[in-house]
Image (tube, rainbow, N blue to C red; front, side, top):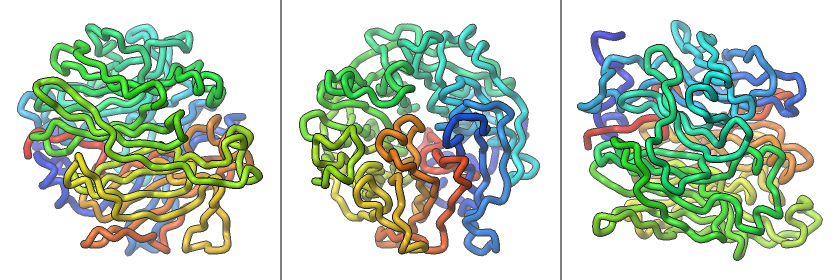
Length: 464
């Protein structure tokens, strides 16, 4: 325990934007085949003045195989400064790193040497099942009172998925978060409006619906998630569901406004069965109830069937496959990863009801295979996927692997592994940093990025 709050905690998003630039990024590397090669958490140098800029400067190999690293998060963050936080002097020190396939969670210490993290605790799946009843841990958020983790299913690989809590100090599993889940069955992401006692959750599918790849029959039948759920954060009870329509399949990432005075946020939908488009929806409060409306639609692109994987040949089109979104800490820019078409979009969401497309870059893509400026002659596979924005909004990092079984379906010739960075100028114009092109060995693929000290999707605030 510290006598003073951690210096990387900020009371408000305005203060967080003044934080120093990140010098390191932690990057989840998952085994490319899942056959005998352990996953790894890599440390990448993000200091432009460093001679090792954009290279791996450290990391830790996991002791087991078959984990499939996916999302991860910090043990503590700015939420610890909320007036009702019972642990105000926790330290941002440990990364909570789940294996999405193994259901094992690694607690990784980033001190004393942030470039050489080490494992300090392993939470085995048996403990999670015994105390919470869940498996396949996914999203990790540091809350005011505990560490919150979403999970996709139960021990048998069915539903319901949900949320469980870890103790801030011991990392022991406390138990399931929900007291009354109402009709909620599918799970994926979650986040909250802390000062309004509201939690929002989204839907992907149960483990059995996902782990062997996208099931086209279930997709066309509208069986994947298409709802948002709203909860009372304090009583832990389900309050309301909003169905976006069965044609809106896979409601994934949730990004609430960082300003705690607001009660709106954005949800990304992977694909519409109507026309293969992707969409972004705005949730907000209206007359005391939650409401949601589509504010962004991203169309599919025509393509030669010869360029398409078997799953898409009959459509003669590439869907955007919106797989991640991220909101800058000033709530101005929303970044949208179009994994299928190989495009990173930038929207000005100053008016969240009327977003404006203000920027776009291409890299990779199922049909496009656009190169990076650092290697203009190299066609790239995979597309913009997990995206992370620096606290000051000036740097945007993203990787290219979605989920191993799904990578293999949409990019059957392999996605390889790359991580790149965009620079965002003062007027908002974004462009590739030609010096930042990171490739890992062929044995691994890259997924989520966490920036040292915090980033746009790691922290929640209780003051405007």
